[in-house]
Length: 614
Image (cartoon, rainbow, N blue to C red; front, side, top):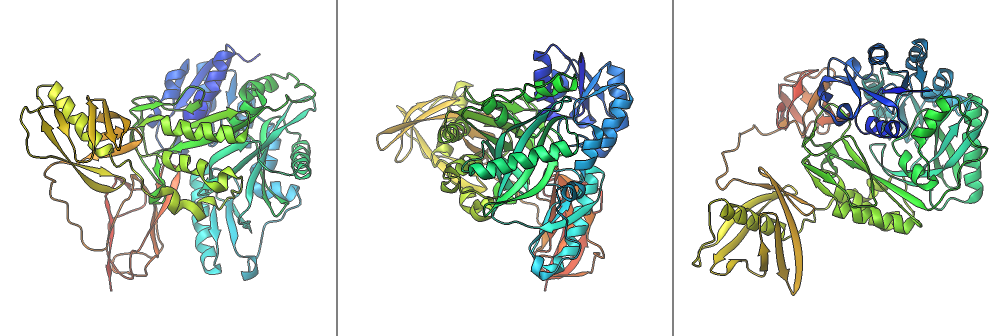
């Protein structure tokens, strides 16, 4: 009987596992890096053990430290979560060798599936050993791990070597294993997966399908269950393949078998020998708790002969701190407020007041809606995103809501190229035109409340400046005997937190929250600009500035001051929040200055290099 569980992970998944453990009466143990010392998962656990350092390689990827932490805290079982060491057979063996219960599949099964190359061979699929023009496009893929790390799409043979080098470096950093392979790239397919659950008594459940086609940088953004519109014979084939894989490696516990489906054919991708990020949609449809079932299987209890019957449809959206319009650049800062409407499941590793840093994945939360039909679930989730209170760094909230309402998604015509085809229209700025006015009026009301007063006589226009969606805007209004006035807008009510405006006979409410210069008006995020801007720091033409805080992971071979470069040539790579970003030459010319060095920590706006065009 398991009495205490250490979760060898962080953030949202650690909090999620702790929730089930508490419901089961099981004590919980967290591990944390120095960057996570005050994180929510450490505050929720009954005990927490420090892993010195901030880099994943020094903390969450150190199997020896985690096993020692379990012993020190008196845990008798380890749950790996997802990512980090969750698919590491050596870690699973170290856990069991220490006399602890491993809440996952047997190490031999992890070993058989952890390498995507070995898994594909088991399914009769061979990677490409020699790539020709006829094979293009191809996908360079890390053999270990997941989450989109170590993946590169190659469309020209000339780019293959660079893609292999970059993928190896990213995979080694993320998973401690730099093995990569090459396979055909199936474009315009759907990413379909089958959730399985197996016990130690020979029973294997298939718990429906999921569609995870909406992806950015090969990482899932929106997932749903069941996958819509699949023919019954194709669904049966997916189930049969999933069970065949599980039985071939004597699998136990929760796992996911992933496929690409294109032109009515299935293409085996991999088996993830762990819980998936998107497991809540399966839980909602089948009315189960997969973590609770993982615990039962680990304790040796049998599953029932058949799984529960599915009911309805569920959709999940991953809320990331990032700017989709700026090449998915991650965002950092204080999460001031996070709340969703009733009836929406919220899985998160943050709470109000927590800081979102640069060291780990930028996912803030997962929002999940369940309803009788797909259309109802999609509508419910899109509406919840509109009404959610998300005050803090920039997020992909608007992108998610627009994606759910896009015709290709509502009609279930989405493929893995959804964002390649639709990103510009989904990220086009569309801020509420009256949000800046509401922010200005709320600010004026706050100043009047704390020592100021509305003017008793008509006066000249009051002017406020804001940055909204990267653009500066100016607001003008007047104080009168009866209150503030603005051209074309009737001001019905103002206070520091609520402004009601009427235009063309329609009244609208604007809820306003201010955190220093950062202002949130309903779903619009604004930055108050000073009345007299400070002189900008001058940079030489061709200066390359860091678009985000992060670490310089490498500088291109042979690059030095004085080197000739061509427009678009990769110069260096930044890693921030588990994503690698390429910094390229803005023009053909000479690299006149190079400030970046491998391993350097940089902040937004740091000068990295200067290219003088010719």
